[in-house]
Image (tube, rainbow, N blue to C red; front, side, top):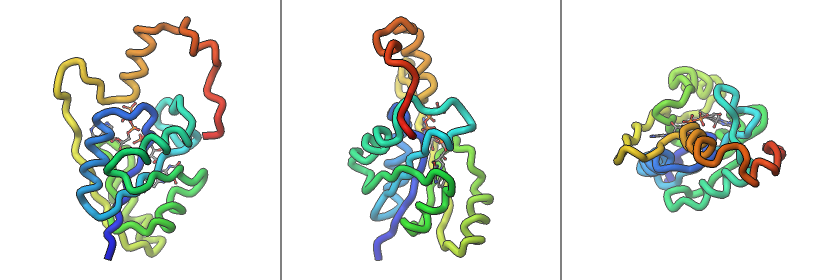
Amino acid sequence: MTRRVVAQGTFDLVHPGHVHYLSEAAELGDELHVIVARRDNVTHKQGPVLDGRQRRDVVDALDVVTKAHLGHPEDIFVPIERIDPDVIVLGHDQHHDADAVRGALDARGIDCEVTRASAREQKYDDELLSTGRIVDRIIAERGTDSSAAADGAASGPD
Ligand SMILES: Cc1cc2nc3c(=O)[nH]c(=O)nc-3n(C[C@H](O)[C@H](O)[C@H](O)COP(=O)(O)O)c2cc1C
Ligand SMILES: Nc1ncnc2c1ncn2[C@@H]1O[C@H](COP(=O)(O)OP(=O)(O)OP(=O)(O)O)[C@@H](O)[C@H]1O
């Protein structure tokens, strides 16, 4: 019986913290399915700069990932019902409450464990394990006069 694991996130600029999270999640089963958040659903912080399809494709290319899925626009449980995981692994600092997710799964009759991954600590001072801090570094070092800035704001659907 294939044991399926689900992880999820924005994955705007993939970094070693993401690799740690997904590697740890992958250890919990035979397949790791990753749900990549749509831009409009990232409301608890600044949204991603990259299109959802690009973020999905990068996560999908990671060895530990069986398949990455662009999330549902409205109902976060649609992909869960389709993937039918045995366990959902929340990120170490992900804003979802595990008990609330468990309750929502029960309400839908979905039999699935919910657990939380550990944090990946820095291995050296200059290591950036946060998309937000990577973006801050880019702005600080490249400023806003870079040629890319002329391309304008993100325009893709996700
Ligand atoms: C079980 C579960 C399913 C999710 N499914 C979706 C989805 O279908 N579509 C989506 O846009 N976001 C979905 N999300 C939300 C995002 O993946 C993510 O939690 C959030 O938007 C950003 O998380 P981050 O701050 O860790 O990047 C889901 C989250 C969880 C916990
Ligand atoms: N250093 C880390 N160690 C372990 N997991 C991490 C780390 N950084 C991010 N993650 C996990 O990866 C998932 C996706 O994270 P997300 O896409 O929000 O990137 P982020 O780097 O956390 O963004 P930001 O720091 O700008 O909020 C989340 O579940 C998060 O908990």
